[in-house]
Image (tube, rainbow, N blue to C red; front, top):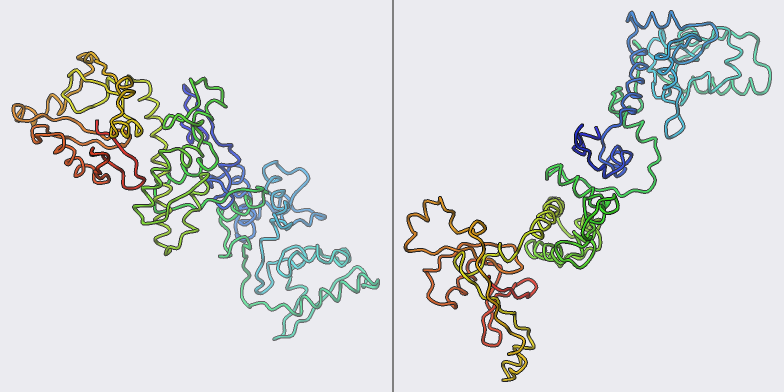
Length: 488
């Protein structure tokens, strides 16, 4: 199961990111709800106890009782001294205690009918425990320990007549006290006529199932403090699991990989390169993440989203005034966004290993020699407006760069494109991006006669940006946070 969950094989070993104890927890206890084989095995052992009580006329039940029944054995399930280990484990499982201190055998409750099958002292049919455990002194005085109910209680309409068979009459104070207690218990009990039946108290339906027994066994453990994540059935399961791992900081971030002995060049976030890459930073503190949440808030018409850890994002829908369906939808959006953000860091690692100058697409034809000019700062632009250009001339420089090698140049459209072959003489297509924003558009340079016309066309292509005049120059400005971008 571990190999299936983490993708291991006989040839490749993978990192086990989360302890198996946490994975096998129920979802209500902060786990994934994956069953443990031990719990399933114990639930199947209880199933044999249930079958022994339900299947009255079965051959195997008569064989078991014939082998294990003895004179001084008054267990709920018979057990001989020389029993096999298999049957011994079945009996011991019924004697184990649940989380509330009750034995599992006490969850098999008999519904009295005619009283011809249930045992008066040994089977649980009245109260919270068998009468042999509730009144042990009277049980020692009983001659026939496995006597049936019909032998001790006789019904005449609504009148109950009790017939006792003691070794001696109860005389001591404790014996008399227990006798009055059992009389009050029986006289207050009302049972139906007909055949008897069994009820499983571990489930509301009253019928034993392995699933209900497994839930009861797993709930008896003490899981300590945990965060209970609300799972969203509207989105794929992988998104829920992704958010569950992110909340525990169990994702393959650089910090976690370093902790596990992997040698990396650095542990900084590949998106911002300012702080170590952790799950909390990647999804909440990184500039890229804050921009994503700002756009989601703007799209959903919500107040700005502020989160300090992944848990804040998961429980965010609880604190918003939304209808139930809207809250569920927004919760699904948050969990899906967490799942979509994580692969971006892997892509940034690949991009970081390439020569960005050779792969960058600019406003120019592929292979054309390009000039790189250092960007002007805002203070330099103010000096230029006021006529102070003495320092600006020394800071700005022009650098020529040789064209990339032929095999690294990628034209647009692709070489085998039908559109390119037809419009080759009349069109010049290039890819256009806005520096810092993850958007790409295709532009035909032959359609524009000036840079200003091309810049105005960008406003239509990139609908989330607008053009503003800044010191007699037009710039693309993000409407959400006012960040300026440069077309490349």
